[in-house]
Image (cartoon, rainbow, N blue to C red; front, side):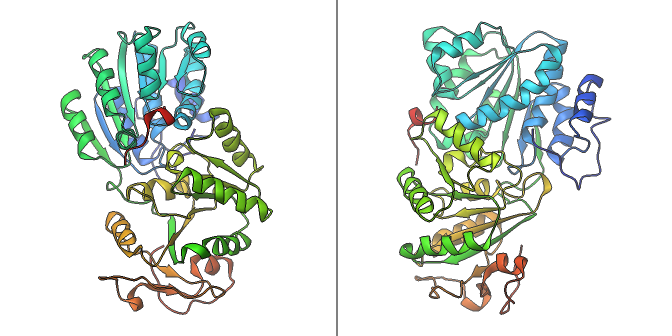
Length: 425
């Protein structure tokens, strides 16, 4: 589960939560709800349809898990939760299992990379909650090994990511099968027009809950940008890893790029693992668990993992490559600074990528301060409409060095295509 935001003044008491669940929250030291939890839980307990918009790391899972478990304990029916990736499915299942055990309920995870036989065994336990990626769920529907006629609650989690990955046809097929009389909740960090169309067609007077403008980054995450030539990225990475001492989540744009970065890191004597669609589910689980336990200091991931990693104490996120889709910038950096903690995000941009940076800045409505490393050549953006150097330049050695007391700023301030469905289902 995601710990709660320490800055909120609210309480779980008074939200309509059953005493048995409140006792569990107390035992787990969950005493203060995050904004999305405080606003969504009462409406969901009442059975209302919900469109919830919140940044990653704000506790969305618990916002729908609590009311779903409570409603299923009071009435017949099942819940179906659709998610874009295997990792996110397993993460959500961990939260649900803890709550479901209070009422002797079972969950079933329906994802690719796991044998159908094991999933059939889980289905024989009469689960009340299905957590599934759309592709594998459709496989079960075709084989008539799962039936959705008793679904009374549907959750579309990270809907925009599912649409990015090309799951819309599968989602539409599933929506035609499940009962129309149901509660539907859609949660995401951004709401594209396709998601709005789904809401309009399949939801009844949904309550719109937006605890942060769509596309905004978490307020406690500081950000900085290094302009660096492609051939110098590894050298800059090495210097930053020597500067920091904590865990690092690094994003590569491609699967092959992730593998190359891991080879470089291991040759440089850094413990590193990779997580992307070319890795088996067992390899991805091992990499994530090794990262959580400290076995691996650096986890190198593609965007498939941008929303499936729930690790609280990630010191920095490094965008080794800028994301292909600008919206993924928010999801990537949201892996640090989770649950109200402070976080830091560093991005590498090549001199030709000024337009990519500008698109990110438009999305987050913030100018990314540029930092320089004193041991690397100074680079600038090329092309038209580049913001004047004086207005953008932050300082000689980044926010990170300032926080570690290793330099004094030279001036400036600043604020803190569709992919294969079979590879991710």
